[in-house]
Length: 351
Image (cartoon, rainbow, N blue to C red; front, side, top):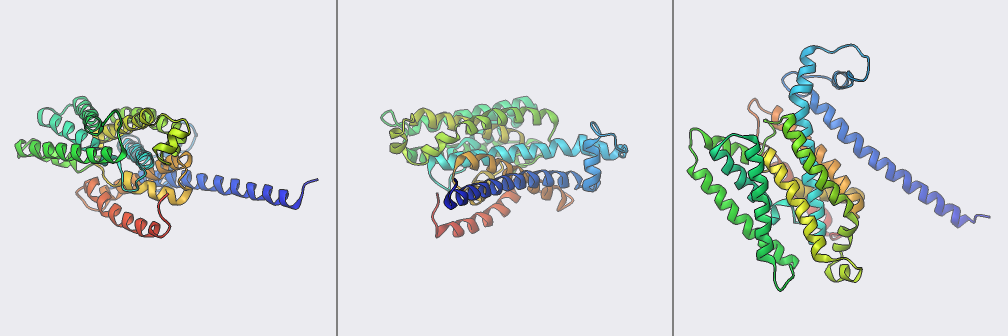
């Protein structure tokens, strides 16, 4: 016969399950709602029902929408918004993984120098050509070179301590930032310099389905790898000695995560330029909702990051006649939000 305690525990478990299901449903609905509203924003405004009618036309026999509305949604706005969602999800999941393995809330994708390396590769490509393939390849290659630089600087006596990794990332990032400044200095001020500067500040204005499929493939593969390693990230966040005691090979696991983050960051920088603060701020918001367990934190960060990046991009293209670079808005929004989150978590500590 069940006791009162077992009945209460069972009811409590069912309640927690319902709360968890409601949380994930809410996050998914929020992300979808932000995307639908964003698809309707612009110089040719559309209501949410009109957007849903256009999106549902291939599978639902509804009244055909205006040809202009169909072209605006499918050819202009959808690739851009989908690209913004992929970039936001990738950077946020990367930030959550890095904060876990470095056990530091101030770590983001920029801290390991990969963003600066990818930025230099992209700027160098723009100096010589406007080819998308060359731009993406260069950004990706120099992002990997930056990670290799961090590896060789941080490696000491066959080990790579966390503090050395962070310091090596700062050194490599500063080095590639200087190279980016040199490229902008020698660029033609009437031709290539505006293109390089605008690209560096971040934008989704040149989004296309080609870019979307390329970056979605990379973010999907390496983001999936981070999700598969979520339990190991939990253990690494306890510290190296505890991870070793629990049977985890610290060095290979940490570098596998760093390589996945490098691939995601380099791919996103290649298609959108430097987009700061997303990978730093969004994991903190996700941690407040789902807690420090990376089994929930990484997917929650990806969903919130997708919604956050879509919102920022919508503001960038609708606030003024001339589009505002994404990097400016993420800094304006991200810095105060991060300051508030830091003050709220100060009393309870970071976990």
